Length: 231
Image (cartoon, rainbow, N blue to C red; front, side, top):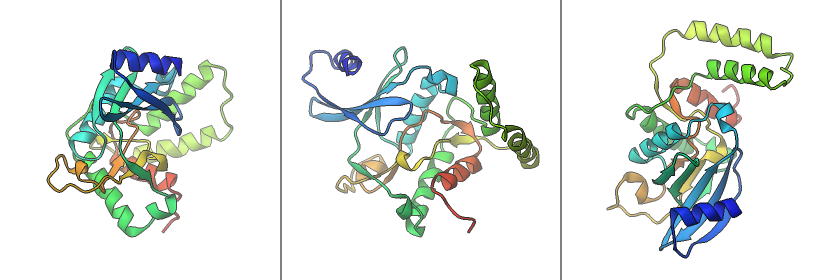
Protein backbone atom coordinates (compact mmCIF):
# COMPACT_ATOMS: atom_id res chain seq x y z
CA UNK A 1 0.00 0.00 0.00
CA UNK A 2 2.97 2.34 0.50
CA UNK A 3 3.56 2.57 -3.26
CA UNK A 4 -0.14 3.27 -3.80
CA UNK A 5 -0.14 6.02 -1.17
CA UNK A 6 2.88 7.59 -2.85
CA UNK A 7 1.09 7.45 -6.20
CA UNK A 8 -2.01 9.10 -4.75
CA UNK A 9 0.10 11.87 -3.21
CA UNK A 10 1.78 12.52 -6.55
CA UNK A 11 -1.47 12.45 -8.50
CA UNK A 12 -3.44 14.56 -6.01
CA UNK A 13 -0.77 16.50 -4.06
CA UNK A 14 -1.91 17.89 -0.75
CA UNK A 15 -5.44 16.54 -1.15
CA UNK A 16 -7.34 14.59 1.50
CA UNK A 17 -7.84 11.24 -0.23
CA UNK A 18 -9.40 8.01 1.03
CA UNK A 19 -8.04 4.83 -0.54
CA UNK A 20 -8.87 1.13 -0.49
CA UNK A 21 -7.55 -1.79 -2.52
CA UNK A 22 -9.85 -3.46 -5.02
CA UNK A 23 -9.64 -7.19 -5.68
CA UNK A 24 -9.69 -9.01 -8.99
CA UNK A 25 -6.48 -7.82 -10.60
CA UNK A 26 -4.31 -10.46 -12.29
CA UNK A 27 -1.37 -8.45 -13.65
CA UNK A 28 -2.07 -5.16 -11.84
CA UNK A 29 -2.97 -3.66 -8.47
CA UNK A 30 -6.16 -1.59 -8.37
CA UNK A 31 -7.23 0.97 -5.79
CA UNK A 32 -10.41 2.95 -5.22
CA UNK A 33 -9.58 6.57 -4.46
CA UNK A 34 -12.10 9.12 -3.18
CA UNK A 35 -10.84 12.68 -3.45
CA UNK A 36 -12.28 16.15 -4.05
CA UNK A 37 -15.82 14.79 -4.30
CA UNK A 38 -14.88 12.33 -7.05
CA UNK A 39 -14.27 8.59 -6.98
CA UNK A 40 -11.58 7.02 -9.15
CA UNK A 41 -9.76 3.77 -9.81
CA UNK A 42 -5.98 3.91 -9.72
CA UNK A 43 -4.45 1.08 -11.74
CA UNK A 44 -0.79 0.38 -11.02
CA UNK A 45 0.85 -1.84 -13.61
CA UNK A 46 2.49 -5.02 -12.38
CA UNK A 47 6.19 -5.84 -12.70
CA UNK A 48 7.53 -7.18 -16.01
CA UNK A 49 4.15 -7.03 -17.75
CA UNK A 50 6.07 -6.09 -20.89
CA UNK A 51 6.90 -9.81 -21.13
CA UNK A 52 3.21 -10.29 -21.92
CA UNK A 53 3.41 -7.76 -24.73
CA UNK A 54 1.59 -5.10 -22.72
CA UNK A 55 2.22 -1.53 -23.87
CA UNK A 56 0.74 0.92 -21.38
CA UNK A 57 0.52 3.73 -23.95
CA UNK A 58 -1.62 1.49 -26.16
CA UNK A 59 -3.79 0.60 -23.17
CA UNK A 60 -4.28 4.30 -22.45
CA UNK A 61 -5.23 5.07 -26.06
CA UNK A 62 -7.64 2.13 -26.16
CA UNK A 63 -9.27 3.22 -22.91
CA UNK A 64 -9.72 6.73 -24.26
CA UNK A 65 -11.28 5.36 -27.44
CA UNK A 66 -13.60 3.08 -25.44
CA UNK A 67 -14.84 6.05 -23.43
CA UNK A 68 -15.25 8.07 -26.61
CA UNK A 69 -17.63 5.49 -28.11
CA UNK A 70 -19.46 4.83 -24.83
CA UNK A 71 -18.20 1.38 -23.85
CA UNK A 72 -15.60 2.20 -21.19
CA UNK A 73 -15.12 4.38 -18.11
CA UNK A 74 -13.60 7.82 -18.45
CA UNK A 75 -9.79 7.84 -18.31
CA UNK A 76 -8.69 10.93 -16.39
CA UNK A 77 -4.92 10.52 -15.98
CA UNK A 78 -1.99 8.50 -17.28
CA UNK A 79 1.61 8.51 -16.02
CA UNK A 80 3.62 6.57 -18.63
CA UNK A 81 6.88 6.41 -16.69
CA UNK A 82 5.18 4.70 -13.76
CA UNK A 83 2.53 2.71 -15.59
CA UNK A 84 -0.24 4.42 -13.61
CA UNK A 85 -3.68 4.90 -15.09
CA UNK A 86 -6.61 6.63 -13.42
CA UNK A 87 -10.20 6.10 -14.51
CA UNK A 88 -13.45 7.34 -13.09
CA UNK A 89 -15.01 4.77 -10.76
CA UNK A 90 -18.15 3.13 -12.13
CA UNK A 91 -21.03 2.24 -9.84
CA UNK A 92 -21.65 -1.08 -11.50
CA UNK A 93 -22.06 -4.78 -11.01
CA UNK A 94 -20.29 -7.76 -12.46
CA UNK A 95 -22.55 -9.95 -14.55
CA UNK A 96 -22.69 -13.68 -13.74
CA UNK A 97 -21.68 -15.97 -16.59
CA UNK A 98 -25.12 -17.60 -16.62
CA UNK A 99 -26.74 -14.20 -17.12
CA UNK A 100 -24.25 -13.28 -19.84
CA UNK A 101 -25.50 -16.23 -21.89
CA UNK A 102 -29.07 -14.92 -22.05
CA UNK A 103 -30.15 -13.60 -25.47
CA UNK A 104 -30.90 -10.06 -24.30
CA UNK A 105 -27.57 -9.74 -22.49
CA UNK A 106 -25.73 -11.17 -25.50
CA UNK A 107 -27.41 -8.55 -27.67
CA UNK A 108 -26.17 -5.79 -25.37
CA UNK A 109 -22.64 -7.20 -25.26
CA UNK A 110 -22.61 -7.57 -29.05
CA UNK A 111 -23.68 -3.95 -29.43
CA UNK A 112 -20.88 -2.78 -27.12
CA UNK A 113 -18.31 -4.78 -29.07
CA UNK A 114 -19.71 -3.56 -32.39
CA UNK A 115 -19.28 0.03 -31.27
CA UNK A 116 -15.64 -0.52 -30.35
CA UNK A 117 -14.89 -2.59 -33.44
CA UNK A 118 -16.34 0.25 -35.54
CA UNK A 119 -14.33 2.97 -33.78
CA UNK A 120 -11.37 4.87 -35.19
CA UNK A 121 -8.03 3.10 -35.18
CA UNK A 122 -5.92 2.75 -32.04
CA UNK A 123 -2.17 2.18 -31.72
CA UNK A 124 -0.79 -1.32 -31.42
CA UNK A 125 -1.47 -4.61 -33.13
CA UNK A 126 -2.67 -7.93 -31.73
CA UNK A 127 -2.52 -11.20 -33.66
CA UNK A 128 -3.30 -14.16 -31.39
CA UNK A 129 -1.19 -16.57 -33.43
CA UNK A 130 1.86 -14.32 -33.21
CA UNK A 131 1.27 -13.58 -29.53
CA UNK A 132 1.35 -17.29 -28.66
CA UNK A 133 4.56 -17.75 -30.64
CA UNK A 134 6.10 -14.79 -28.81
CA UNK A 135 5.04 -16.19 -25.43
CA UNK A 136 6.65 -19.54 -26.31
CA UNK A 137 9.92 -17.87 -27.29
CA UNK A 138 10.02 -15.82 -24.08
CA UNK A 139 9.13 -18.87 -21.99
CA UNK A 140 12.03 -20.80 -23.52
CA UNK A 141 14.38 -17.89 -22.84
CA UNK A 142 13.42 -18.14 -19.17
CA UNK A 143 13.83 -21.91 -18.98
CA UNK A 144 10.14 -22.76 -18.85
CA UNK A 145 9.14 -26.24 -20.02
CA UNK A 146 6.85 -26.04 -23.05
CA UNK A 147 3.75 -28.30 -22.85
CA UNK A 148 3.99 -31.43 -25.00
CA UNK A 149 0.78 -30.47 -26.80
CA UNK A 150 2.23 -27.20 -28.09
CA UNK A 151 3.45 -28.50 -31.47
CA UNK A 152 0.13 -30.11 -32.41
CA UNK A 153 -1.81 -27.04 -31.30
CA UNK A 154 0.57 -24.78 -33.20
CA UNK A 155 -0.06 -26.83 -36.34
CA UNK A 156 -3.79 -26.21 -35.92
CA UNK A 157 -3.08 -22.51 -35.41
CA UNK A 158 -1.10 -22.40 -38.65
CA UNK A 159 -3.95 -24.03 -40.57
CA UNK A 160 -6.41 -21.49 -39.19
CA UNK A 161 -4.09 -18.62 -40.06
CA UNK A 162 -3.69 -19.90 -43.62
CA UNK A 163 -7.43 -20.49 -44.07
CA UNK A 164 -8.58 -17.09 -42.84
CA UNK A 165 -6.57 -15.11 -45.39
CA UNK A 166 -6.04 -11.34 -45.17
CA UNK A 167 -7.98 -9.65 -42.38
CA UNK A 168 -9.33 -6.13 -42.00
CA UNK A 169 -7.93 -5.08 -38.63
CA UNK A 170 -10.25 -3.23 -36.25
CA UNK A 171 -9.87 -2.03 -32.64
CA UNK A 172 -10.16 -5.10 -30.39
CA UNK A 173 -10.06 -5.75 -26.65
CA UNK A 174 -8.55 -9.27 -26.83
CA UNK A 175 -9.11 -10.20 -23.17
CA UNK A 176 -12.87 -10.53 -22.75
CA UNK A 177 -12.96 -12.29 -19.40
CA UNK A 178 -16.23 -12.16 -17.50
CA UNK A 179 -14.60 -9.93 -14.88
CA UNK A 180 -13.90 -7.31 -17.55
CA UNK A 181 -17.60 -6.54 -18.07
CA UNK A 182 -19.65 -4.25 -15.85
CA UNK A 183 -23.24 -3.14 -15.99
CA UNK A 184 -23.41 0.52 -15.02
CA UNK A 185 -25.96 0.78 -12.21
CA UNK A 186 -25.90 4.57 -11.92
CA UNK A 187 -29.37 6.18 -12.07
CA UNK A 188 -30.36 6.95 -15.68
CA UNK A 189 -29.84 10.54 -16.83
CA UNK A 190 -31.25 10.87 -20.39
CA UNK A 191 -29.77 14.33 -20.88
CA UNK A 192 -26.20 13.25 -20.09
CA UNK A 193 -23.47 12.65 -22.64
CA UNK A 194 -21.56 10.61 -23.66
CA UNK A 195 -24.06 7.74 -23.85
CA UNK A 196 -22.64 5.62 -21.03
CA UNK A 197 -23.20 8.40 -18.52
CA UNK A 198 -26.92 7.65 -18.79
CA UNK A 199 -26.68 4.49 -16.64
CA UNK A 200 -27.56 0.90 -17.46
CA UNK A 201 -24.82 0.50 -20.08
CA UNK A 202 -22.56 -2.50 -20.58
CA UNK A 203 -19.02 -1.26 -19.99
CA UNK A 204 -15.73 -3.03 -20.68
CA UNK A 205 -12.62 -2.49 -18.55
CA UNK A 206 -8.93 -3.51 -18.57
CA UNK A 207 -7.72 -2.59 -22.05
CA UNK A 208 -4.09 -3.67 -21.58
CA UNK A 209 -4.15 -6.27 -24.38
CA UNK A 210 -6.04 -4.05 -26.82
CA UNK A 211 -4.81 -3.38 -30.32
CA UNK A 212 -5.81 -3.52 -33.95
CA UNK A 213 -6.81 -7.09 -34.67
CA UNK A 214 -9.39 -9.63 -35.77
CA UNK A 215 -12.91 -8.94 -34.51
CA UNK A 216 -13.66 -12.66 -34.76
CA UNK A 217 -10.91 -13.38 -32.23
CA UNK A 218 -12.71 -11.03 -29.82
CA UNK A 219 -15.96 -12.94 -30.36
CA UNK A 220 -14.24 -16.32 -29.96
CA UNK A 221 -12.39 -15.11 -26.88
CA UNK A 222 -15.66 -13.93 -25.34
CA UNK A 223 -17.34 -17.26 -26.18
CA UNK A 224 -14.59 -19.38 -24.61
CA UNK A 225 -14.35 -17.23 -21.49
CA UNK A 226 -18.11 -17.53 -21.01
CA UNK A 227 -18.12 -21.29 -21.58
CA UNK A 228 -20.48 -21.36 -24.54
CA UNK A 229 -21.42 -24.76 -25.91
CA UNK A 230 -21.34 -25.61 -29.63
CA UNK A 231 -24.87 -24.28 -30.17
